[in-house]
Length: 191
Image (cartoon, rainbow, N blue to C red):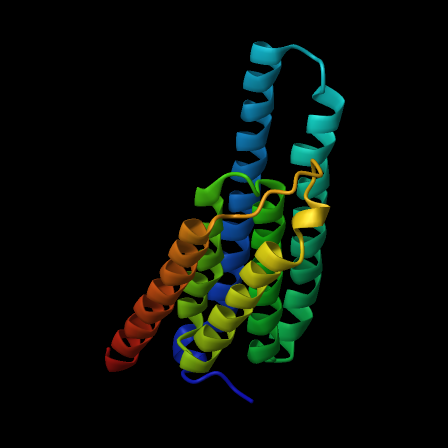
């Protein structure tokens, strides 16, 4: 299977840019985590600093680095063989899993669920309706897993479940992101 407009998309350049963007995103998330830990340390002392350092900084950062490292290592061979579809799928699955880890780590912060829209918008770069649809369905599924299957495994062992309003709002936001992404792809194809 080939991506439509492969040559016009300049897949090698855009795949490299997406990976760079994602590494920057991971760096920003890690920096934000470090700042939040410093603020918490200043406010509450060192009572749970080792636990918080592990749960909120080290463990998720390690997962992000492993996921992106796999994509980084696999991207060049896939692009050299002109396997653009496989690279796109690998990248979007890895980003979706990274978002799941981020949302799982910060399960009690309702606004974090909107991050599931991030991979949907990134899929627009590939200009494929089917790829955007698959990314949307994957992130909808991952959000469902987060809400329905992962609560007993949350980092602090809390039995937190997003309320109906947050869950419905997140699903609505994902649907809106999907529709906006499809509109952008249609516009790309027109141009």
